[in-house]
Length: 296
View 1 (cartoon, one colour):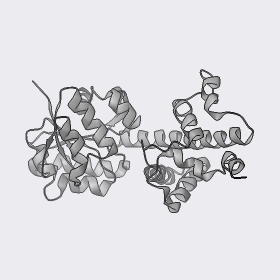
View 2: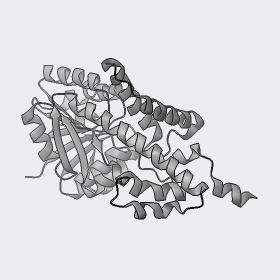
View 3: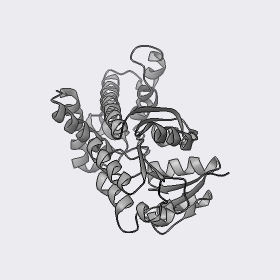
C-alpha cells in the first residue's frame, strides 16, 4: 500500500522533503500559501491542494515545514487548517524549527482534538534531504515517534527520540549553536588564509581526518573561498534559531558568550539586507584581501 503524506510548506526545505518523498514512491498531497512553490513537486507527481485541510484529507501523516510557531499554529488550528481535514488519530510531524515551549503547547492542543504530534526538526538541509540522509531529532510519545520514523525513513538516515514533546526542538537549538559557531569559525579561518596568501580551497583536504575536520569545513570553506552563495539555507533562519537558544539559556541561567557573539554577527548581516542569503554570505562580514588586490 502506497503511503499518502500531506506536506504543508513547500519552501526550500519543504520542497526538498517533498521531492524526496515523491521520488521514492510516496503519494504527496501538498499545500503552500504560494502556489508557485508547489509547481516543482507537482512536476514530480505530487497532488496540489487548496488548503491544509484538503491536503490532510486521507493522509496517514501530515508533515509541516514552516518558519515560525504562529505560522505552524495557523496551519494546523486556523481556518482551513490541518485539524479541519485530518481524521482523528492522524500523526502530525512538525519538521519546522521552532521553540520547545511553543511545541509543547501545540502538542497539547493537538491532543485535545485527538491528533498526535511529533516534533522532528532536522539537520543536513536540502542537500541531505535530496539523498535521504537527513539527521532528525525527535520529541513525542514513544509509539508516535516510532511511527514517524517509519514515515520519514526515505528522507533520513539518523533519527533519534530525545524525549517528550519539545525535546526534539531543544536538541535542534543545540545543533544550531554548534552549526552557527562552526560556520563563523570556518568563515573567519577562510579570511585569515586569504590574508596570509594560502589557498583556502585546499585547506579542507589538508585537514581531513584531523581534529579540526567537520562537515561544515569540508562543504563550506571551498564555498567561502569562491564566494559561492547558492542558497541551501538562510542567515535570518539562523538568527531565529540562535535567538531561540539564547531564550532557552536565559530560562536555565546558562551563560553562552560565544553564541551571543555569533548571533550578533548574523543579526548584523541581516540588518544589512543579507538575511535571505546562504551562510556563505558570512564572508561579507570579513574584508576580502583578494578583491582589494585586484582593484589596485
